[in-house]
Length: 326
Ligand code: XMP
Image (cartoon, rainbow, N blue to C red; front, side, top):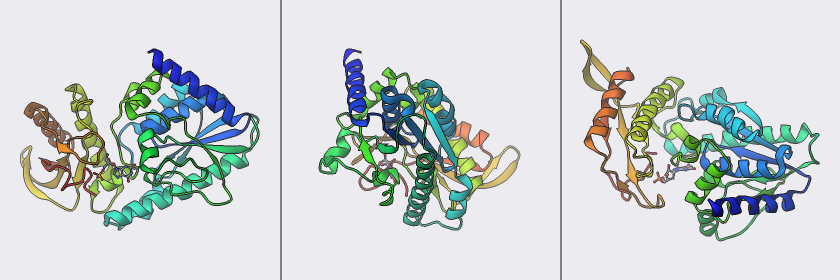
């Protein structure tokens, strides 16, 4: 539409004025905000931008590929991918406590991103001068929440990068600072990003790591990824994506129950479906999903994911329950 074209043009001009001929780094998380912010900067300064994507192995099915293939195809951006799956798995080995998991994931993320940023800086560049700017997908509600300051230095903690070291000082480029989420999505569409990426529901930075109750292992991640993909597919097929805020699928890896599948007794794990409706995630209500959609999700998960023999529904509002289980 008109307005979106205007917003894009205006932001492109502003980014050019701010950045000049300097180089820029943008961390991609797989989420909407960083993708749209990166795509805007790419449109503005082209190959002065390098995007960095840390694959921590805690993403949903298809998300890493979406960043590595579809985002690159749509934007032509120069992307540095760091495969850090092993590193995150070993750091998480033996850990079940939710806060400890979050701390570990946040810490490892900073270390890996920092290292990648150093490499981008060290690689120097044909395009533009030194790296001086860091893109952040800060939205208007984030600005209001944090008191309105504009900054240099560090990345929002809920994006799991608590701060960069003193010797890696960047000035922030925040092209989404005046936008709400729905506007960001429309800008993303205007920029030609894949619609699965643009309409993606919120997903926590620590990813599937905090949707496995108990220790995070590669096998459990694979099981949860399959179950989550089925739930998302069926919600999309039923046309419910824009009606619900999000629907975490949680693997109760420490619980087993008896079941019967095929001609035998099973002793598998349950998953919990946590569909919620919300305006801003501060409060939420559980979504009254149609029974036939729930039935299809349940049938498919128990048929297609061998390790799961029971599907349960979380009917708790927030408060008292949070949206995520950890
Ligand atoms: P809770 O579980 O606190 O979640 O009700 C509220 C919203 O925030 C998301 N969430 C996170 N997002 N990093 C994020 O970027 C995190 O560590 C994190 N924890 C929760 C959650 O998915 C929901 O949308």
